Length: 267
Image (cartoon, rainbow, N blue to C red; front, side, top):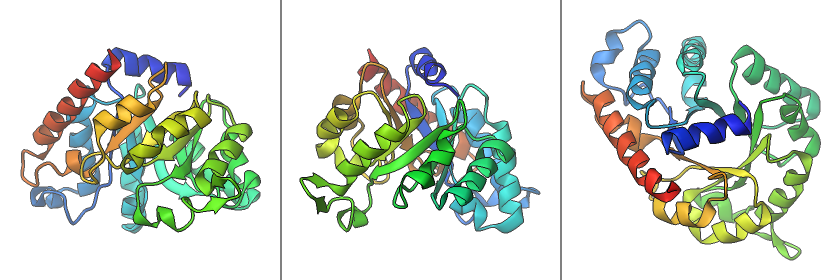
């Protein structure tokens, strides 16, 4: 998906919501366990209930890989079921030497047809560049994350900059705002004004709103640019809004609430 198509969808739906399909089979409603593919059935109903209120879906691949071949098949079917109007993110956090990253890119962009993949930049340029070689595909590079461990490396000084600032400055030269995004956690709202100055034109994938406590209002006010420039992800707050047979309906209700708030910030 191109940047212009993504921006078009944001403007049309008045939403920059990304629904995280972190589908833990131990948490889905029990009545779904009788289906041949419970994970896909859960995702299918969630997508049907939320697609009018979001512009993207993020599949956390760990929850699928943990289920072996059945999990990979559920992930493949989920990606195929997501409408082509929606931005599809593989939250896989890959990144390795060049020939290995090339195979990861092939797996997620060709075999699985994701639009984007999250990438760990620790190994440097040759580990990221293979993901930038595909037209219409995106590398979403880890910048400043929401977890407590961010202080161990990302928030350590390297010269005059924090390490995450060096990552943003350096990676932004490898790609362009047309094929590179950054992961910036919603719980790091105090840093967003500084981050936006470093990368004024890039999109950010922003996890941490909802169950992790990030403020949608703070993020929207501090991180938006002229094209909106943010995809705010909510996972558990939406997909596990209910553990009963009304789970999809409740997910739709929560998604609509996010969309309504987002429409106010976009106007």
